[in-house]
Length: 317
Length: 110
Image (cartoon, rainbow over all chains, first blue to last red; front, side, top):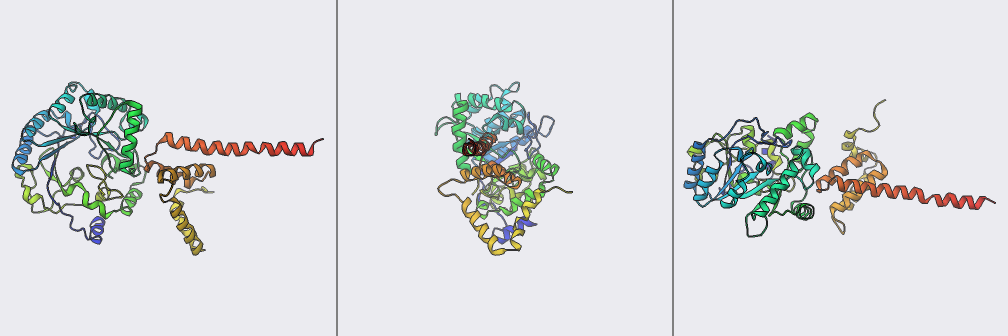
């Protein structure tokens, strides 16, 4: 496999976890949106949803492991009916909780009290906003989504999210709107801050820039245009060994909606299981063996190690 | 007859160097150096590249510099304004030559 060969060439093979800081939980693939770049291929018709028993196992794993950060993703996590149960339980353990939200879900029926719930539980919100202009965002995420996102950001700002450096955190996520790489994260953050303030009067804490992974709907988009090979070539040619150090699989473990453990959400989507010798399910969670495990890799890993790198927390290099 | 322009030909650019490698090497080094961040940022340089590409109407360069602009976080507003600048200067450069025609008329007329 070429990614393994590349790691070997740079003395990074086998890629191993360096610690275990974060438990990332995918609570289901259901979403009110069907974004063109989504690696999960999430949408309204997806039925894979984490049940309450599996959530209880997540709580138990956190309580016994010493991991202090829970990172909740989806789909739209808010469409899991047990989300509030999970947040309440984990908050009582004293953990820091992050929710990856699409922002537009707040406009759905029965969701209007969610921002207050998030505030009361001091949740850090990591929100998708691929760009600061309406046309660019609506093209990728669907007509009218930018307007809904700005309304949600205003509500969150009014509740204290993304306003003060020491206050509630509201991070935004930028990703390219096509088959090109993301810009420099620091410079793009400056531009988002200036433009979102000037145009809409909204603020945020940090911006993360992510590379589009050649998986899910984005992979189909590349295949339809006969560009998968050229995109993969660019990823390979942009391999940056410095980015390997910061990729999130080195300090995170990912849990699927059915409780299966993975090295990351991308591996989950292609069903790439953990390497041998470590527990495979949240019910058998063992932080000690998982914190130094060998990480399962495949060709899509070039997506996280290209250029400035890309991790769940943005640029990795 | 096939198309004069094929986007795959851009990847074959280095083949030009087969016939005069020293000159092509000098061109490549000069090209790379001129696009590096300096007194001007990378972003300013790719916008200049995009504007020049349009003024020269080079489809290879338009493809390449549009992508470069997007990778610098620029958007359709930036790109369209840059092309307007190139077009306006091209238009102005044509129009200013009307003075040449006027001068000629003055010179040859009674």
